[in-house]
Length: 163
Image (cartoon, rainbow, N blue to C red):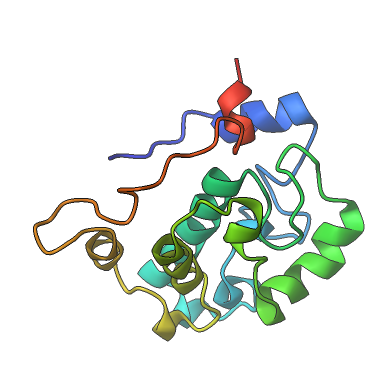
């Protein structure tokens, strides 16, 4: 699977009238809700593959629940300026995401564990490579195992209805 940016974030931002998809109101490039703690704190020497994997955890959370992990809001409901500028950094740095199984009870516990490991505060406790993440999703025979008995709900993500 290859993921490429074809301006989807910009299109969504225009459609929903939000800044959070394209730039951070915190004055840093990127999207604050996907930034790892080391990015938010400016610890540039710690930025590496685990930093990107933190964002992957947030993306998986979004796709499997249709919600923001830090506030539990549907992705179609924008964060307020106060939420993004004041509350979001402290939730990322000190809090824990709302359990994705709260929003999607059919989600396998193994997938929730993978998401939470991707979103660990300490980059040394996260997966260290995409290859490591891939291995967690597979059984001993190399087949994708954790989603074997999972059927996503039809409306679990706002991306289902982009038209």
